[in-house]
Length: 356
Image: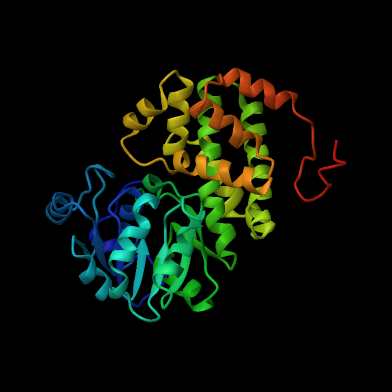
């Protein structure tokens, strides 16, 4: 979809311009900054790397994460997080999960009472199996917290391809504010109150995208892809509901919607890692070739440990772990999955003990 010129930048539904901050200069942070800028808002776009900030300031392009995509509107790149937060009514956080807490903790005093802070990060913290919204709640409890998640490939958002996402927050004002800020002719924002379920779905689906990439590399076929995706959906919803999520969340954009796009697109980082491993690369080689964070690799180990700790049956998680970190062959894991007990098709309809 072609770029429009800056005179057409106002595509948002909200006429009121706001000061917002986007923390994190990766691909998704860049895509959100672009939407916000084109919707007429002033965007304080924070990143660690001064060279990256200078490049965006001078060329309006983030060449490492979004080459060839021009950032229009009032987007102000900066390495001064305190200044970005201080000037923002709403803060969007797109910092990788491994650095998420340390960055927020370092700057916690700079957030204001009642400030809206939205996590864009799909990941899990190792200590205590904490999601990013829980990290925010612990570090900046005086802020109003929300989560944005859904089938959102950054490159397609940047190209203004039609996209929908989910804002999850307990506070209805937070949900409405984010809908007004981001909603436009190509980006639709739906609301949900199940913060934990929406966020956990976004983290879990990355695991199954790696599985889908493996299957694609092995040319296992469309039937196998459909089987792996739907069994993945059953597995992730079973796990999430055991931890308190609403099962209906997994029928929406943040659940099955995100799973579909991540498991079928070569634009997905996690899919590409799985595909490379399926073609014979080591995990380290696949990650190095990618050059960006694939959150599913970190999430896999944490989910496997948690599932075993609480007794949740997750054969795809266990099998993928054995392929990536053990000595199991892909074919052996697939064979073991096919020989397992044939249980219920749809989770929560039949008791697992009698669903043969």
